[in-house]
Image (cartoon, rainbow, N blue to C red):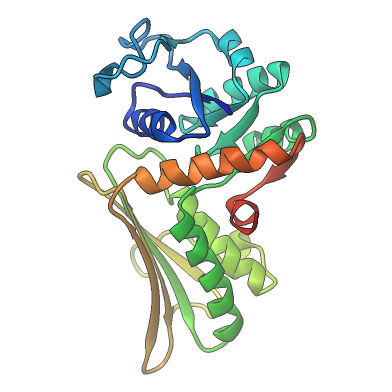
Length: 263
């Protein structure tokens, strides 16, 4: 399967390039970066000391040479790439977070003509955690206050993280609610007593934290915590490759990592 990587000079892009080069079923054919990148025109494998013959480019027409794009960039960049994917019938794995409602709608519309995996977190472990949260929310649906805590590196630009939001959405949907109706995004000053049925969010940004997420179900006399901690972005890369291979079986449709895990 021929793979394109966006954000080729960034940390995640390089992790993905290395993972593709090591995968026996995948071939790196395109490496994209933004027009101002100093890495344009260099070999995509130079950072590994392994020339690939694939030159980093900002020319989106290169996508016609790939079967699937793996995109971890910014919403505005991803949507631009997605338009080109539609033009060249290149499937897409989207790990970008921070989309607004219009951006999500654009992805949904693109999936009517093309196969897309869109998930806030590509880690298999995180997606297993989501399944655990669904079960916990079923069992602990009364008498427990829910708090979602997340921590990431200081360069992350959206908050709460896409993964934290997904965790909240899973719990809210299990309760038959919409997250926006029961989320408590921030607390400051004299807030009064907590209201039953709310889901609180706490955000930390600092240093080089890759990604920590904890959901607490706080009852009277006990607290249940479900935690996932990332020590390497390699888990995101491996999940993304699994998602790309999953798309080989589909021409159109919008899928998530639960679909990928279940095959």
